[in-house]
Image (tube, rainbow over all chains, first blue to last red; front, side, top):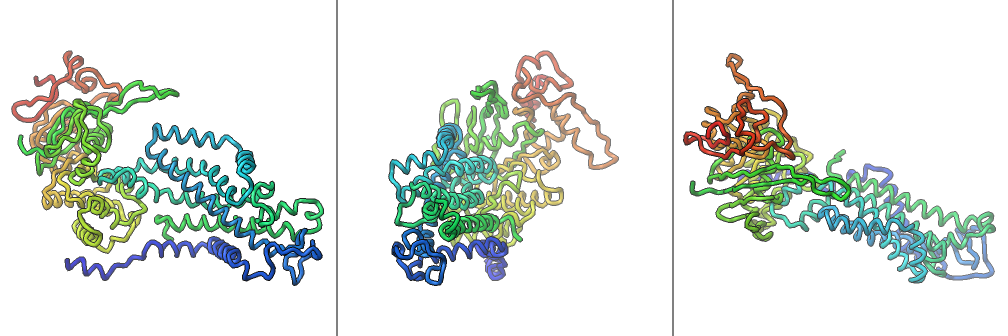
Length: 294
Length: 328
């Protein structure tokens, strides 16, 4: 026991999370993306404290005003403050992205692991379901479902979540199929672990890279499809703002040509958010891989 | 013959060959074809043969890591499976039994989960079988690391931070963590370079003595097997051709294949003159093994009966068990 106690004091390792954090910090783009996202999230959450107007406050005397001191980003067709609505719109867009991705990642990862690990019948059945889901164009189904369920923010989340799980399912399945042939899985079996323990303790952590990359892309996708559905009038209903339906509201020649403040800021925000999320995703993937140690 | 820890009877493992769109079964690869042997408690049993002759498959089938096609395995009086009598141990009982039978893998780079640190890798089994609580498991893990020649401070490191030899030590530590009675070493030293091989071998030797282990040592390195094992079985195309104690087998090989195999061992002294027996042709495909004695296509002494009848594994002069018509 002496030896062990002596060695206890001289442990010279850094815990994994700190290693990961250090690696993440070294990736400048990822740090930039994180900062931008944090700012966006904070402004969305604390919107009421930042702006002096109400979300739906109309002022018909001041419609289509250019950006000025009173209205940083001007006003829209009902005289509502565009900047205020952008911040509130961020709440919708970010939460749609997050929740729809969570839904699709949960469905996709669970089914993907089952298909890849058990193979045979489970694999065939799940993969045929994936094929069926994949052969319908996303927007056609999404529009149909939105039309049936009615336009609302929750429906948008569910639709994009339920329709978006197929690609991650396939990637996770492929990854699992290659991982399960590795000897450490056999070793886990030899130790007496159950299938479920092997799947979630050994195989799942080894698919994190794929899942994280997909999830970040998925959030971006969720934001985009919310924007798309709202743009078509099937997403978030007025007067609740989202970046998508603000873009949609500016969809006429007059606005596009002469009132840039109606559509450039919301478009830009979608763009910046997605870019930041992708940077963060890349950074996370590299940071969480214990094999890369620089 | 009493006190056999492990008894293997008529073990078979066939892998189906599938073809076409509908994956129709068109044949079998007979990786392990009807082998029987037993290992006494405390014995080191060597399994040698060319690559692809079914050594690893044998080891894995015994541990029930891959489903057998036929035969039975009895471990400590407990039947693990008996295909002919449609018996298979329940999953729950098998999991309990796993404590007593472990495996060390050939490739130290694939056999450790890259996302787990050494402590988690080694203590996983102890926690699963509730042998220790968390705190004790950590102490035990450190002890095991020291026992296997690593320092206890490595406990939080990840597998990629170690060299091949060190990783193999971790693999060995994992396999002895559950205090098993029986370990299958699936070419545990084949992926290591020679200087490390001897270190790992002496580590294994030490552990076998200290922990009173029974060992199934799979290898293709004849010199290693000769000095390491008590009993040796020579495999060819999924079947045993000769089984004997290591002295008998090396001093007096009887089967033509064993003779050829042993003649291929390089001489350790340049002055030593060795007669090399060169076999002609290649190993036949296990998907379509020759009729009769599997070795007859390459055997220098083929007789007519060899192409017709499968020779039985029989004792010759009270010594080695040999499967050859020349001696029956």
